[in-house]
Image 1 (spheres, rainbow, N blue to C red):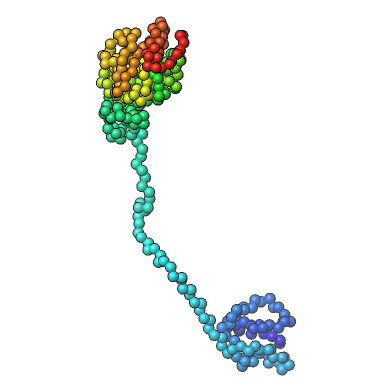
Image 2: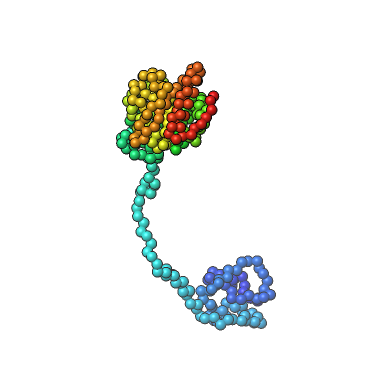
Length: 330
């Protein structure tokens, strides 16, 4: 029998050995033969001869010169890590310490919270303010009960270098909603009145309310302002007059006219109409002309002629101060 027998293959497999070579023409028995990549040891010549077939004419298989016993495999050396910085030690931390601290929730009423606002400016401080400071002071004002009721102040609007300043009494619901003074139909009529004497709201005139916040009653309805509310707001209007450089003031209604002229608020407007008054604001002097509020004129159309006369008087006062507001009769 040529080659290894099945018994020899099983014997070698049980010993953990595999045939070193195999005859080229040996038939394939279809059985898997385990082949070791590196045998633990090679059989000695005597052992190989004993296990070989004893047939007289069978050639002895060639033997390779293998050592009597294979050396035990040398374990792979564990690589030494390259020198470097020591790893950071783990620090026990709670999950809450790693979470970002959330900011406190915004208070929608913080703009009107007395604790969140600066202290009220004094009249002397208001008299030294620029435009930005004045707007901030008006927004933070708590000088009267109207603003302390939580009403939003309505800032002035128009040209900040103006020839005329138009001053109404108190802010209305329409002003508060539009965030501009003289809003709605009264504002449209005022624009027509100014255009009649050659002026424009955005180019030549600064418009403001004496009382920036809308005075309201306990039920939320509009009410007439009190003398204290008018006096508290007057420094703001005087500073607006100085900053605009306006030489002529046109007051609308009795509240603004009586406050600026030092009269009782309830006195009829007829007592100051038809004449030009001197108005002192800080170190600046201006001319004041009083007329009806456009809201009143919308209800009393017969007063249109007298209002036109007031406008002409204000135009003449402006001309005396070097202005040139030529217009047309309407």
